[in-house]
Image (tube, rainbow, N blue to C red; front, side):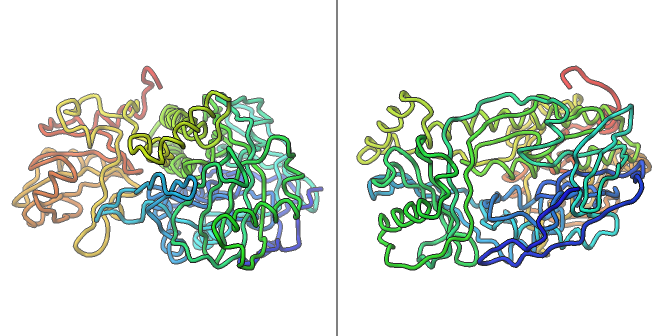
Length: 566
């Protein structure tokens, strides 16, 4: 029998709750138009909510009977918050989270580089936002509880899986014993130590780094603003890097590289954790302050991905699909983008308006994103934690030169996680004017968000379905375009939005949004007559300045056919 912890976890700032476990005395079978998700962390919960928003029923399996322990994933990017907004959880998250824009790289007591994340008046969220993972999961769970089509099965641990044709059979252990669950679709969101991945003998490609890192969360009152602090080669831990992040509830994260001669078990001994924290506080002149330890762990930096995320009826997301270094806040933030990309595609297949071939584009788009991120993350990791003596010499030279020379200081940049542009996605239109239009809004890029006059944002209007946006004047829309979209609506989730440059409503559109010509040119690189087809996850699928009837319909025809390179 599976015996998850039934005593609430201890925390200085979060009150854990133990949820009743689920058990069945007989096998269960999910409805054929539903999805079973293995793993109820942030990515599993987000995937469940995004599928539920698409009208798909979900069974969410959690091996535990309570939310995750400790702060874990902590920093969430603007893009992640846009996705979490689509789940319905962002408003509560941002009531608790700490937004920030700057990071400081400090060497020998001097700020050698100050990273500033760009902020735009049309951004719905700050570039970076700090919130402990247990709080994040709490708000996601509150959103889940508002959906009748999501069932959470606590205390259900997957111990075996088998695929036969279009059925996946999961063997589940519970505190009362074992039962089997049959599902047509399974999403594996069971984290870095994914049982689903290991049981299927799937191997990841990429690199693991020898270095290990300690995370220690303490409660202390420090008068620093919410900014990332990175201390390079401090006297108490020479050659290594120490990160500090402010968290809500007077919690601070200390993140430091572990001496290779010290085992993880030894590093987590209270006396060694206390010494490290006290040494860091002494270095910043705060050793006179009292503090309490909340939570600690040790992790390794890895940059790995599966080469394929779709294995018949089992689909991988988040850390189950890829493992990314913590530097640059890439782990969970990449997982949220997986969930957003997968949810609408899987819903399209289940609802029958796209073939299963569409799921091949999930692998193409998201493996491409993971490989891009791994390339960038590897650069950050080699600088933050040099893996060889050669890289250490290079890093030390940068540190030394940065005290007096401006030109080397940008090398401190930690290459923060950013949205992947699906520039080469097989779903992008093959019959449009992409090659003749501005690069900023190329196919695969995110369509820029826009703050509307009523206080809403454009993403509130276009999330979750395909949107055809046209820059219009005098309320005039092409009758042929309107008719084409009306025909598509009979089978597909698609809407027509007019961005009106003169404020005159276009009656043929589902909605009109007023926008001035200068902003349209700056934000969307378009003028009167420009048309954009935007995916349910905000990425541009096609664009035209000289539209020919039938070209948007041709894009949707691609969703039911296999294409070279998918």
